[in-house]
Amino acid sequence: MKRIIFSLTLILTAGSILFAQESKTVGLSLQECVQMAVEKNINMKTARIDQEKSVIKKDEARSALLPKVNFSGNFTDNLKLPTTVLPGEFLGKPGTTIPVQMGVQYSSVGMLSISQIIFNKTAATALELSKKSSELSNLNIQKTSEDIALEVAKIYSLALTTAEQRKLIDENISRTERLRDITKVIVENGVGKQVDLDRVNVSLENLYTQQSNTQSAQEQQLNMIKYMLDMPLDANLILTDTVGMELLNNSPVLMSDFSDHVSIRMLESQKELNLLNKKMINNGYLPSLSFSGQAAFQGLRKDFSTYFKSGDANKWYPYANFTVTLAVPVFDGFEKRSKSRQADLDVKKTQETLESTKESFSMNYKNALNNYVNNKNTVRRQKLNLELADKVYKETALRYREGMATMSNLLQDEMSLSSAQGGYLTALYNYKEAELKIMSINGEIKNLINK
Image 1 (spheres, rainbow, N blue to C red):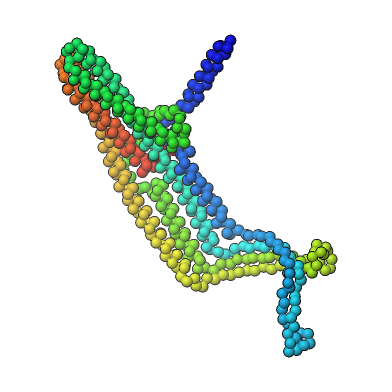
Image 2: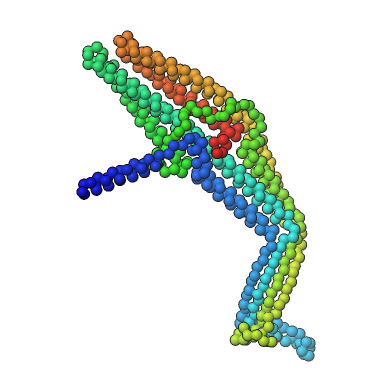
């Protein structure tokens, strides 16, 4: 009975372990990876925090234009009353001065105060500046998401290329192992040479090394994807897209207007920020008008023991006032003038950067189109070359088995096949990189982000 219970427990435990392992397997397409990275990547989290801060700063700037209401209270114990001197004429003693202590020992005040800006162009422009900063933060989120999408797509494409490379290496190993077995039989029968078998074994060891290196590179690339997606590193990630997938929906065409690109829009927004900053500084020359008012009750007592008792001697005396203040700047030592000149230089600097960025976009897009066309043709040629090299190798292998070709001929064709495989894989990744470059410039990278 104990043995049966133990067996059932072992089966259930093994089943739960298998279930846990299966639950960690995740299959993701490129678009799913990008969307998950945009949602969970640490750079996006920090960008969203910055955007939330910009909204709060906008509320902070708005608060300068809202009323300020405060309540305050104080209690004073005049341990020694202050003394003042009165002319003797007041008390019928001309030509003398009489010291007099004025006031009471205990006093307290409860006050309600209010203030409100009526006209202040600097504060109003600061609010505009904070709103524009919030818009820039929103653009920064978009740019960060596009940057993350581009990086994820590059690593995803590289991982697919590495997986294809590993597949080709596995096929090469299987083919070379069969060749080793055939060569071994030929040598054992006294027909072949031992050096031919040694050459095959050397080639096979090289392939085993390539297989190990490729497997390590693939694991590192998958771990990088998991990191960018904020996934557990022990999760079993499967890339569901294929290495031959097309990233561009349509063939790219030449374009010259990049004003809608997020980088250009950010520079335009930065230029507007600089202009608003200059406007805010120059508004400091304008007068400002504000209102303030106070309402209070004051208690004056000689004896603390009767402080909280009501009566004619313990009255609370009300008072109130309001003030309208007009402030007119006259001279500040040229401080605002210096700040205004610096702000003007910031505007010019941003404008130069904007013009240069537009020109670089045009140049980079033309180069990207050229690389796209070239790499697309290269992939086609390398694929045909790979098929031809594979065909030549198979024919040479057949002739070798029939004794019509030497091992040197076969190994030479094997090297040609490996070179063709490497050329095809390199061209394939370069083509994907060219596609992504075009997508990052013309804005199609957003198609990977939007659901």
